[in-house]
Amino acid sequence: VVILGAGFGGLAAARALRHARVEVLVIDRHNYHLFQPLLYQVATAGLAPNDIAQPIRSILGRQDNAAVMLAKVTGVDVARKQVLLDDRRVAYDDLVIATGARHAYFGHDDWEAHAHGLKRIDDATFLRRKILLAFERAEAATDPASRRRWLNFVVVGGGPTGVEMAGAIMELARRALAADFRAIDPREARVTLVQSAPRILPSFAPGLSRAAHRRLEVMGVDIRLSSRVTGCDALGVSIDAARIESGTIVWAAGVMASPAGQWLGAETDAVGRVRVRPDLSVPGAANVFVIGDTALTQDRRGRALPGLAPVAKQQGLFVARLLARRARNPKARGRFAYRGVGLWATIGRRSAVIQAGPVRLSGPIAWGLWSLAHIYLLIGFRNKVAVAASWAWNYVTFQRGARLITGDDSNPAPRDAM
Ligand SMILES: Cc1cc2nc3c(=O)[nH]c(=O)nc-3n(C[C@H](O)[C@H](O)[C@H](O)COP(=O)(O)OP(=O)(O)OC[C@H]3O[C@@H](n4cnc5c(N)ncnc54)[C@H](O)[C@@H]3O)c2cc1C
Image 1: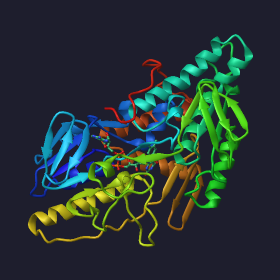
Image 2 (image 1 turned 90 degrees about the vertical axis):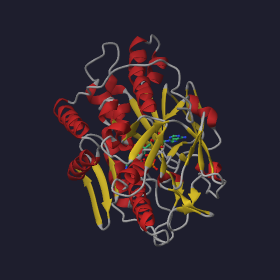
Image 3 (image 1 turned 60 degrees about the vertical axis):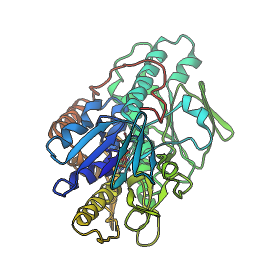
Image 4 (image 1 turned 90 degrees about the horizontal axis):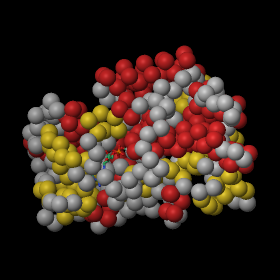
């Protein structure tokens, strides 16, 4: 079994195959598994990159039937049952594609140079650099307009990532950096959250959206609802008829599936997700499965499942079990059904919203549950301890330990590069 991608879906599949009578090869372009839900905390200096990532080899090191290959996949030859890499081909009997998604600018790729998305470790450390440098540049600026521009932060997209980023930047400015500068007062920083829909967190119940909205406003975030970004450039953002001069624009407005649909010549939806059969295999190729953010799957009522870690994990587990059964009985069949675990988002250091079945929670209790759940879900004992210790320290001292400006001003590697 060849598994492409060691994110939530691919890793769940690989680990669930540990007792199956198959040989597993996991191919990823990075040597680490990344816990994306906490990326925003790396971008805002709350956590260090290695707190939320773990080498794939160490995760699978004790699994005798699993091997790992660091390589970028460039295509799939379904007829010959081979995966195409930059410099060679790898044969498979069964293939599981779990190559995730990337941020997308929907026809405005030129905005990428100015509005930075958050998907990989490199994106997070790049944004951390941009955000921290903005305060340094404001401190050094001699004219008020330029100082104002450096202290304006714009987050585009009012889903969970945008809400979490806006809250975290605001807290960085108002708490962690408050006493560190002389020429500027970081507390004067302005964070604007731009959302095209009439409410933030539109996938949550309206009451939770309102609770998150109120909380962000109390924190000082300026929320622009039903507002569309019409331009991004080096000096700021155009929003419908308005203009915000800003040196830091964070893009949290949209994602596009990995190009697996093109590799397979399969039917996809508007955001590139492959339409799969109920057993997650690709129509016309019963031994090729697509899972996670790259797949278009539905719940019992026919609604598309969202791009969430639990969806990817459950799909990885499902495919692994199906393959293990097929190793014993080639006629084994299955049908994937998602068991929802709810929607979660944090708003700053003491508030969160949780929607799980009939349960609706907001405020500090939701934040406590959110924190415990994320520590539990992190892979690796070291990471669990490191994150718990960092959060406890940040909570008590209001400090952010990972406030390092590293790297250079060039964009991180292009979205499709290694
Ligand atoms: C900032 C952010 C915050 C999020 N917050 C939450 C949250 O709070 N809760 C939640 O449930 N979900 C959250 N998500 C979504 C969740 O992370 C995804 O739904 C989940 O990661 C999807 O799993 P996956 O296995 O499909 O893909 P991923 O986990 O993205 O893994 C894809 C893997 O494929 C590899 N890969 C990609 N292309 C290639 C290639 N060409 N060759 C080789 N390897 C390749 C990548 O390196 C990666 O390791 C968040 C996502 C982001 C970006």
